[in-house]
Image 1 (cartoon, rainbow, N blue to C red):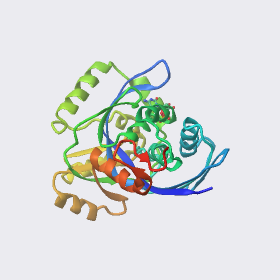
Image 2 (image 1 turned 90 degrees about the vertical axis):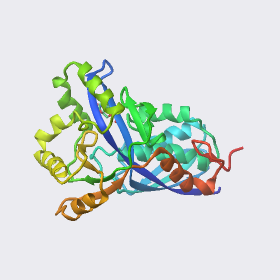
Image 3 (image 1 turned 120 degrees about the horizontal axis):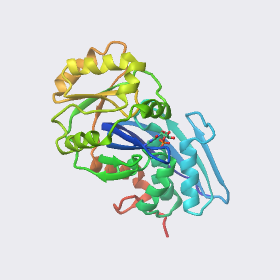
Length: 308
Ligand code: C5P
């Protein structure tokens, strides 16, 4: 049986504002955020061999039970009602536990790639409904660019591209657990109305006021170093500086590339990663390029060359 392999990029995201409104009866938190794909990416080599049974192996990261990448592969094979031997090699660039959505992006990449390799077409609406139970951030990576996230973060509305800031990420190697950060934040939640209003303002006029991430109020006291990093970015001329997701990565957005270059150079000892904001059209054309040998046409999601 023929094995087909594709090498694809799975980009990270940052949150251009994140407000946590309330704990819901299902235990999740109602949130408002703006997701943004960025240039930092993992590389996945995904191979598929038709077979009766489903078998998924993972290399390059710990294959713990319930691993998101494995679950994504199993979910999409079941959706296609096909067996298959799948091997996934992940070359990690996106730090884990940093609020950059690395695991979620890997899962979405698998949902987009396996139908192409298996010769099936799966509608975007189906992919979105498979993505949501895997993780709240997974659906966003099927859309990319700048998008409004509501509900758990799985309810998405594409937005206009964010202005093309030059950016950088500070990734200090602190691992923050997302469920723990939600647990810590939950008791201090107050009336959601003012947060909703100020979030809506920040979406309408994104550069008028500093962006807000509610997780900073619980993560910064635990890790004062993060607050200091944010302060130093603002002091060095960042137009915006914010923690991403539940942390610990801090990003800075700069109007001038020259200012950014100075900050990168003076980032003594810190892990400093220059980034650019990836628009939806660039995200999709990058995807099409990665899957080009196996795809036809330019529909989204990519359609397989092997589909009957
Ligand atoms: O959806 P995901 O698996 O990424 O969420 C991990 C955990 O974070 C959930 O089990 C839940 O405890 C918490 N969470 C939440 N509200 C959200 C998203 C996540 O409480 N909107």
